[in-house]
Image 1 (cartoon, one colour):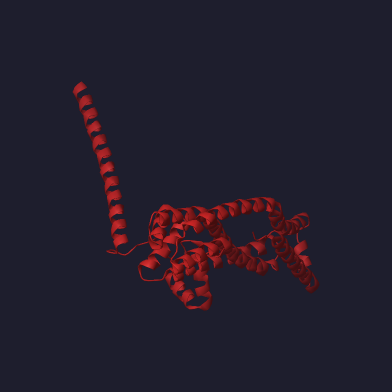
Image 2 (cartoon, rainbow, N blue to C red):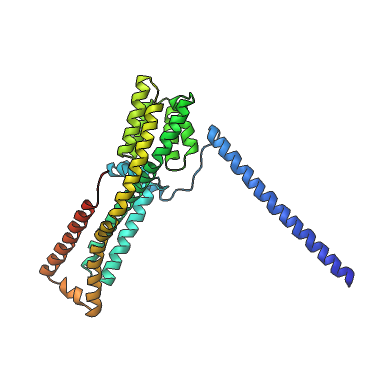
Length: 312
């Protein structure tokens, strides 16, 4: 009996050991495979394979339109891993969902209004992602300018300095500079590559940096002194932008609170007196009043947002 127990324990230990060894070998093999695929992808021996794209037929049709081309450029500026076709499908689903929710919670008249709100939400989401990416890039500009100054002072050419900055900086600066480095590698000029970068992420700080690099490259002079001064200026502008954003945060919240209060009051009225919204929107005068009220909310939102937008 004791021998049977010892045999069982021994077999169990051997199985556990073999299981641990198998998991370790599997994980090591996966890491080696990923490293090999990455190395071969960088050398161009195998194509780069990303995630599987959905709605390919819709994506091809959307890309053919003029609006689809603009949408593709806007999505590219956000850094999102999504195709125009996928965004169109998701936006359509959002519109339909908000339409049904508006009809169910408010009244049938509010369905189309909520559907239009879905389109605005989708476009606003892209603008928000794009602006957030631009803000992150602006915050990285002092480090970028410092790296370029150090690389130039060490005797590296501007092309090599941009490639080195692309390797050292994190996203989004690293990704954008990698695109610039790839364009330079296939024969694009520095003016064109940096100009496209400024078009993708428009900002005053980036325009100043690009102008400094382009003029210094054309003139053939050193850019170390200019980049050093630019680094200090960008640091000061970074702090100023942070202070301005903090001071105006309450105004920005007010812009979003005003329409939310309006929609909340409608829900409160319908909850206190069921069917009140159906009666209100059952006549032409009521519908006109609702449309005018929503238009005034939209105008108030735009005005408050304009007050809170200060270019530094």
